[in-house]
Length: 94
Image (cartoon, rainbow, N blue to C red; front, top):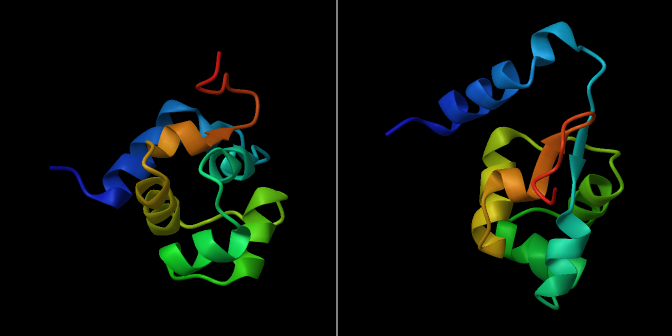
């Protein structure tokens, strides 16, 4: 079974991040959280981070580590690529 780091590296290479250093990570964390009727604080507690971290991710001010991205996906019951994608790529909601 591949590690979290292996999966993250494959995603980054597949999307050409090495040739696009200005690519931004976009997300639908706020939407996924709202669909489950969770507050930022509730999600933060479940993911073992601060509410400010959740807020910063939702507003695009902070890019989560691969480990945190997987933790958030697990808490929300979705795949990582359903929460995060690179700018310029088609999101999973095509």
